[in-house]
Length: 292
Ligand code: C5P
Image 1 (cartoon, helix red, strand yellow):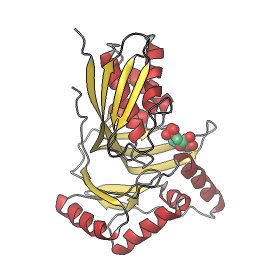
Image 2 (cartoon, helix red, strand yellow; image 1 turned 180 degrees about the vertical axis):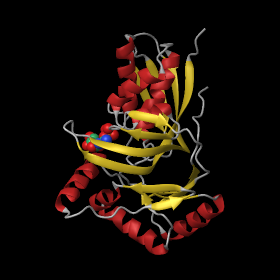
Image 3 (cartoon, rainbow, N blue to C red; image 1 turned 135 degrees about the vertical axis):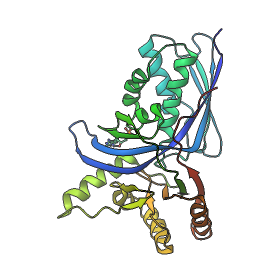
Image 4 (cartoon, protein in one colour; image 1 turned 30 degrees about the vertical axis):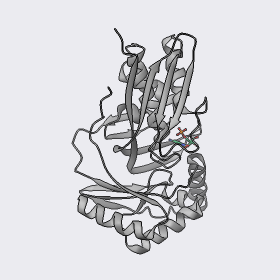
């Protein structure tokens, strides 16, 4: 007897370091990143529907604003892509409880798509391997293959080469600063190309070291350039002396990493009194939460 309903969590991702290579003929850039999941997650409940029903999506939760509940949602595309490759009819109802801010550089949509692939593989009893799902994931978006694996990993190619890290990471607490701005990833990459072309030499990338890990983001200056409001927020927090302040991925989330919860909470409180943004302290998780 197969389950009729599966609950799956979709964790946010963070790029601890992100190096960007040159633009490739396919319109994407090569990258080299250490990516980790956070204990901030969306929750999906996937329920079987009668044959011919198709995919139905309901979106709820504190970060639901602006998230589409139709074919524009990556979850819908993931369900259709998996059904097509397996030769089954895509009949499923998906509730998506959103906690990861959309367009915030935390991979929310990508993680939802990956969670959909993992859960439907079980709900529909398809027997796909992790590498089958990763191959499908790469066609949905550059961050989706990492989200399928869901463990701290080195990521390269355009995002499709994911190698889980051998060694456990030290404990890391992340202060997330969520200014509620939407920054387009494609625009940030275009700005990076333009900045690299116009500069006589590449501007120095800010690097930070926390618990022996080097943190940097080569998309940071381009993201700040694309969004003047984000730059203003970044400068305000930088002037407060927030240690190791960074942009998450292509933005708009800002973050700082700490190796003690005391330091993280101290800075979260200071930031909260000054910033025009929501603030949360989250941990890096070393494994993937299991589905029920
Ligand atoms: O793959 P995804 O849809 O997340 O990418 C969004 C945009 O970011 C792409 O259309 C591309 O412009 C840019 N991108 C890139 N190189 C990557 C990943 C994304 O240029 N490795």
